[in-house]
Picture (cartoon, rainbow, N blue to C red):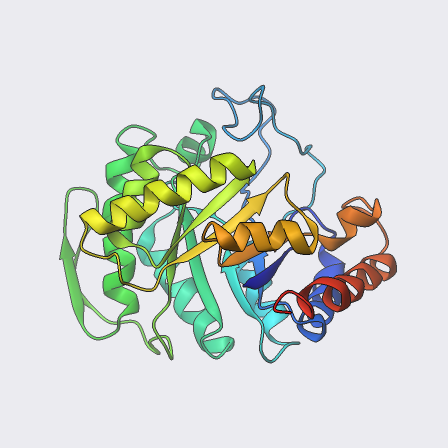
Length: 291
């Protein structure tokens, strides 16, 4: 069982201190959220709230996740960083590959790429990407990313992306793992087909259990039942030592959490009390979870 600290919607000047505290407390990773901008209106519902509304505001702080990973990587030694999840549909995969190469090199290979399609039509169109055929475009973009990140001189000729031989140096010092986010059947099939793991958004325990079982079935269909595979979970109704052990029993390998929430602190709280919450979580949960 691993634990990952989510830094979503926290003030950017706190990130370095939060990362150092997480490393000292025994966290394995930092989960990096992604939001390009806040549009005044959106033409689609947010898929992870009951009423489709966004639970952040136009003033909520967001850092580019790859910039944040490089920044926090510079003040830590062991923590890994992964996007949870980066919206690939609105991005060009060749440009993104350059960024990922850089972050992987600067952190000594301590970076994983969590990927989703994206939900907001405005993010697609205002970044110059079509909203139509977004799933197929993302599938092709994943192929482009893996091809470039694996190193060497490569070329690609597809429906959406086309380039002759190129090479990006340096290649990542180790293979960059890909994690796929999303709860739809299409997303789960994508994870089983091409990813090293699946990442949930906010889910109740029973739904999480059923989804993990579904992913395992899809992996078996792909001949990957015995492959190493991560299940990163944001479970909203099982907490504490017993709750986390129950998550482990259904297959969760990596619990994404914000310890200060359990102490009644909001995203915009001062950093000192958050650091205390991280230390307490390390002492009372992480240090004891294997007992």
